[in-house]
Image 1 (cartoon, rainbow, N blue to C red):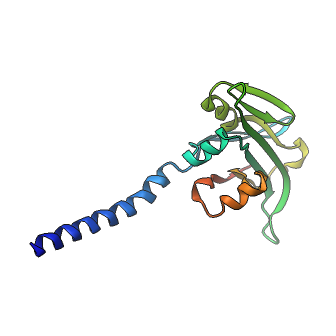
Image 2 (cartoon, rainbow, N blue to C red; image 1 turned 90 degrees about the vertical axis):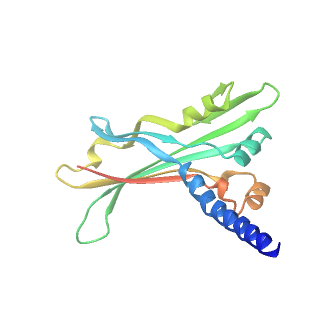
Image 3 (spheres, rainbow, N blue to C red; image 1 turned 135 degrees about the horizontal axis):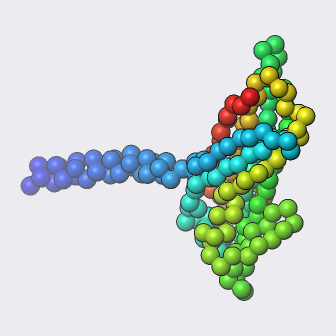
Length: 187
């Protein structure tokens, strides 16, 4: 009897160990990623089009439904390559979206730059913060012809803009870390 109990205890321990190893892999599979990323030059300057795929973790979505607004921030910075010194910063642009749930009317409100739009469902509201087209990053004269340039882009859920008590409560919780970064060269 002791041998069977020992084998089943070892098997149970082994299965728990495998489950612990596979859980981080499953979490990584849902990591945010750019599904579209296009840098284009035009007469108006350098423009960026991007689309980000992510799903809100259950804890983040619960906080949103309980009245905590979420802030999504996109930052893009353009640099010119220099062989003799650090790369020269050419331009920088930032966008901030605020997503809030309004329980009295049961709608999600997305605010960007003073403009607001209401949505009946969370997926519709998130669709507006996941995709950007025609975002002007630099003026036309800032990009030098014949030089090599690159853009550094980051998109994140900004927890520093949350109410102070929330910032303390979520410290170290990985479900509140939504960050995707990309560097792309262009001429």
